[in-house]
Image (tube, rainbow, N blue to C red; front, side):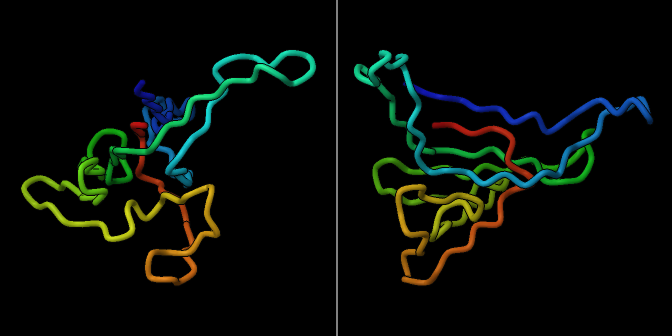
Length: 127
């Protein structure tokens, strides 16, 4: 199954009567465990589905009326993350900078402590 999560990045501002982009930073878990069936009263029969982050769609810019779109995409066959920015494609050595593995000790592939700040541009997540 595919899970698509769209973040509400644009709101209608009643003070200005126009749309505006929200800049709230969001940390993106690389894996999600989602309950698929309510557990019985004793806690048994709880079932879950596991999802892996495979793409992030980003909107660069501060306005809801313009900006630029880029995508961070995981190549399933190699496990390599790439950023697609028009005709320019670059490898993301550590994956999307705003993502983290909730099941790890938060260190990077190079052994350094990986601080995840969050993304103000991510608005569509594909698991």
